[in-house]
Image (cartoon, rainbow, N blue to C red; front, top):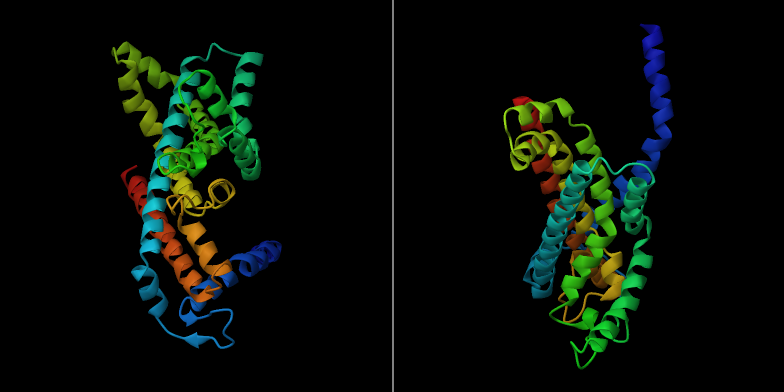
Length: 297
């Protein structure tokens, strides 16, 4: 009994530095943001006053904030669907072409994962060079005679959000592909062989065998992707800056502008709490689905 208590105490001492780090870098800042959301904290004013829920009333009366929520939902939904769709398609392709082995297979997967290895700053810089009015795409289109004048892709009302989504998907989908493909590798071949004996088609095998076996991975990746995209800031700030006309202004861009351009830290904190609530709701849904799935199993 004494040995067990010493073992537990030793484990706690090993975890203590990590716990302190998490408290200082995550828990305390989170608590501070939640507390400040109930205060009027405008930098030019010396006094900070308690106003309870007035910040939340103010932000939900702000049409720009409502618009940023809608833009965020559009961005998150589009990127999540495309991330997982591309990951599944590529995983199916590599799974069906297992005969491609050795250097060729490793080279193909190595090329696919390159975008994920780049930083968001590098990815944004690459696409700025490609998409600016004198960039690569406009040059080719003009050479082919498809356009008369260069198109400012990242400054266009029609194309800005589309390109933000394309850049995000290009940058991040290799991560999802590698994890989905790893999940594919865990599916026993015996299940496919039994299905083939029963005359099942490839589509039937995917939906009745493969997808149920990898559904937990897909569900986890979906939740992680949504949360990551909710807090995505770099790629938008470095390309469009939230423009044109606020059509690519997501919640993170809106919070940054409220805090560091308007210096309204109380309002920015309340906007951050809204993001926290949305992320918490998604996490709660995921946990409920996971628990229900475990109960069924």
